[in-house]
Image 1 (cartoon, one colour):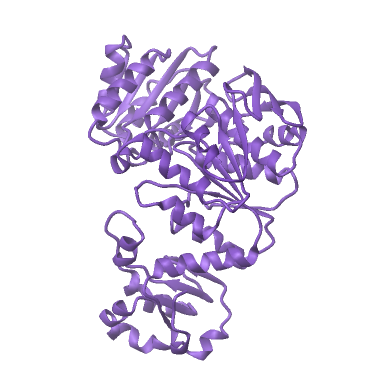
Image 2 (cartoon, rainbow, N blue to C red; image 1 turned 90 degrees about the horizontal axis):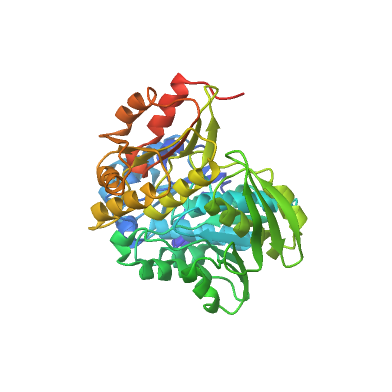
Length: 475
């Protein structure tokens, strides 16, 4: 941290620190509290207005915090409350930068491999699959808490190494949503030994301007690798495949369509939630019974397999690990209900490519379903052309074989209109997810296969909650 050690109370230098916190509500005895304020957020390219947590420093210290990191000018503003705690304050010009430097220092002392994952869609699922495969080789794996993948979430995860340095490898999701070199900044905290690039879709174009700019932002992961690192690249995405020339290390490619180092051959869909394929790696092949559906999930599995291969795992070892995975909650989670219908809970987030991909998944995997139903929430952050993007996405979905659409909130109505223009006339629009949930429990029937998906702000998980309140899951 950039702090003047000469101004520190000598007692602090010898204090036992248990952990670190940026949320005053979670501060406990023995922790150091970082008081964040709007200037730090702005300096570190976080969008929006944020609360000044300096006003919570006194309560954090009263709850047993060892010390608090504060901007000097914020101390002056809150001097009346903080003066009596002056000997427990550490002054830094930027508390977020200090937090990140602390995380980098903990990482550097740990000094073991980092696998970093980015992509426009599927990051969290791929991260979990990679961690699961590496755990199958006996390694202890640190991974992001939830989807903590930004300039605060990643340091929070990494600082767990200060409490437990016994992890063998870290698998870290790295996200971005602005043109401010977010991934490059994250790579400075934990430079990747292995950089996994999943895909480039037109997500966050509202802030980045074009899909080409999205690709450049994602490529910062490969450019930010350690010298001689390994780039794991999706060869089926030409923008990702083009990143192979951006570094001087090794490339391991994966794909379904384009000839690659790691591939899935002879893909067969079983009951929804089960896929069989032959995993091919440079050192052999093995059969996989994969408990997830969809081409996008097979690609995520191949990304995990490519990482496993780069760590010396055999095709058979990787296949055995992939057979025991489970999807993270709200990301392709398959719910089989006793009443005879199946729901795919993919409510965490949505964008046009991910939505179309998931619709293809249920169409491909739901050949025996009575009806294939989509509950589609509005997709956010699509820029000025959002209405037309929704309309065109609706047309694509109609052509895939969906039987009915429940459109939820805002521009999801444009998606429904697009589907109707392409011949899918069975659809309903609801103003919010709470209303959709109430109505949908009377609509769903035995034999239905249902995909529920929407951007976070639409809260389409409310439809799932209503289903779980009214129906039983299979035992």
